[in-house]
Structures are given as C-alpha cells and as structure tokens.
Image (cartoon, rainbow, N blue to C red; front, side):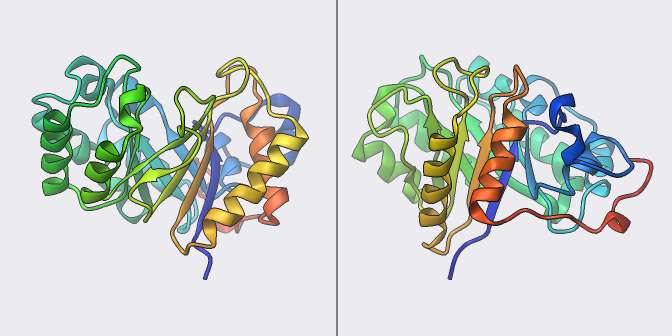
Length: 256
C-alpha cells in the first residue's frame, strides 16, 4: 500500500505567472492549500513565531494539510547542535498550536558541520526525549554519508534528506530511517534560482512514486523560490503523479 505523498514548496508565495492556477478568494496560504497538501515553513529557521501565528496558519488550511518546519538556525548553525536543549524545547512550544497539522521537523546542517558521533547522539537522543514525531536531517558535509552516520540516524528514527544539487556521493538518495522519505529540490544548476525541466520533473515523479510504494510517507519540497520556479515545478510533479486536487473552499475561512 502506497504511503501518503506530500508535495509542496518552501513557503506558499504564489508567483503572478501561475496565479490563475490558484483561483478563489483568500490569501496566498488559503489558495495554495487548494492545490497542494503540504508546505515547508522556512521562516522558522530565521526567527521565532508566536504560537498565535501558527494557530492562524492552521486555521487557513484543510484538515489533511501538513506543515513541515525548519529547525531554527540558532540550534543548527549557531550552537551547531551543541547544548541546544533549551532552544529545541522553546521551538516545540511555539509550534504546538499546529497540532495534527504539524509534519516533519527539518534539521538542515551547515556545510561545515562534519559528522561527530558523540555530538549527533547527544542532540538526536535528547530531541527524541521531547519529540516523537517525524524528523528529517539534511547534512551537507560528506562525512555524514557513511554507514556509521546512517546507523545513528536510523536508531533515532531520523530520515536523511535526499537533496539536489548533490553535494556528496549518495546525497541524492534517502538514508537513515526509512519510515519517512524527504526530498528537497533547491534548483540546479543554480541553487534557489534554476527551474527543473520537463525530463527532470518526469524522472522525479517516477522516483517519488517508487518511494511511496514502500508504504512510508514521502515529502517532496521545491526550494527554488528565488525566481518563482518552485510552484510551477511542484504543480508539474502533482500532474505527473496524478494528484492534482482542489480542496473544499468551505474549509478555508475568508479571513485567511
């Protein structure tokens, strides 16, 4: 039995060039959620949000919609996973109002952060004492793509992100815990700017369908937002998977 496939973009800005694909009343999030079933909140990486903000976002989307959340840079880039228990607990408290609309937490590591078994064990072990939901980790140093790192992620039920562009061997395939597959497309050859062509998107749709056959949930997020390529690329994958959707507009308050 195929697992749930969540397709979306980093954020929910709708480019003017494809605005006609998102008809109806409401703001960007409410309209976005009529076509997509998921989004990745990247702003949480840069700054905290009030719980009321998360509650408002949750009210703007249908019940099956899910938000993934990027773990704050204060944890991943400033403290570099060390002594971050207090920050992680505060982050969890902020996003609590999302309730069952909360998807995976995304832990994106700085490219300079090499795999340190003791550090990773302490961070993910402590995190699992406080959070039982899905976690995806996007390492960007080659030392994370080893059997030792994979085993550690597996023990803590942390999925390793499959990312493009590929920064290390095997980085374009999922690893770690396979109870979740999380794919992030940053744009190639120019990260955050480049759009993906039809052949690449067809191949990606086939790959996602293959991942879903495992029965585990699959997330596919386009992060090539700088020139507005993410939304049309994500729509193309939806079409390729036969998952185009229109959510019930009655489930979105007009104030959203």
